Structures are given as structure tokens and as C-alpha cells.
Image: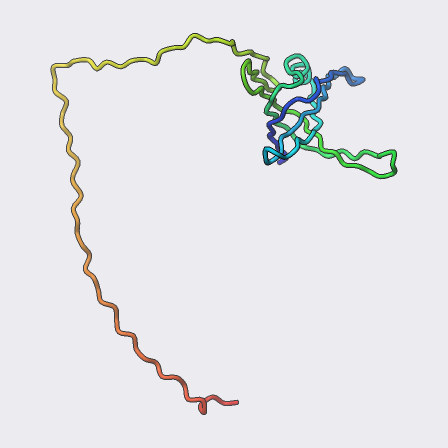
Length: 169
């Protein structure tokens, strides 16, 4: 199964174009952080198709931090210098914004923004009702300690070494 989940920052604004069949395609470059804070970022081409391409183009912009789920593929490019270069490309299946105003998206879901301020909702409170019947007391049986008898180890017997003359050569 080819599945990849990356956290990245959008480097260039997504570019929307159409195939000859009229299908939407969005391409963008994202940068993935290195393993250590001092490591440089790594660029990666990301492609979205169909309704997801439209959503990416409308909702995401340069500088947005996103989590991208998709399939990783390799493209071979003929270079003018005379050699072939392989580049990775991620085909988006789902994309999620990180931070305020986060978007929730998937191929079939509509874009939804989270309001900048939401009224906090207090958790429900519980107040026990007084009843005339007392609660029954349940007691659990207490575990008892039962030591197991200790057996003394059997004495180690001495095995005689074979006589070197008894071994035939």
C-alpha cells in the first residue's frame, strides 16, 4: 500500500489548470522540514485532482502549514545536461490546515472554516438526587495470603569424566 502523510509548508501558491478533458489539476511546491532544527527544508511537488484541486486552489496559500495525505510517486525527467533525474511527487488524497482557521477537507467534503472565536461551553454539572433508600454496601472479598511450600533443590551429582583410553580412534 502506497500511503504517505507529511507535515509541510506551502512554498508557492497552488496553480490551478485544466486537462484537455476539463479535469482540474492543482500543482504546488511544499517544503518539508528536516529531521533536526538545523537541517534544511526539502522541496516536494504536490498535485491534487478534481474537486480537491479546486478546494486546494481556493483555500490554501503560500506560507500555510498543512498535513497532506496521499500517494508518493517518482517521475523521471530528461535533463538538458544529458542525464535523467528522478523527482518525488505526492498526489493528494486529503489535506488539513494546521493552526487557526483550520480547514477540514477530503475528496468528498466541503471546505469549512473554524471561527476565530467560539463561546466556551461549560461542561455539564452533576448533582446527585437525595433518595430515601440508603445505598447498599457491597464488600469485596479480601485476598488471603497462602504461602507455597518451598522444596529444597536436589543435590547435584558428580558425573565421572570418560577415560581417554575408552575413546576409539
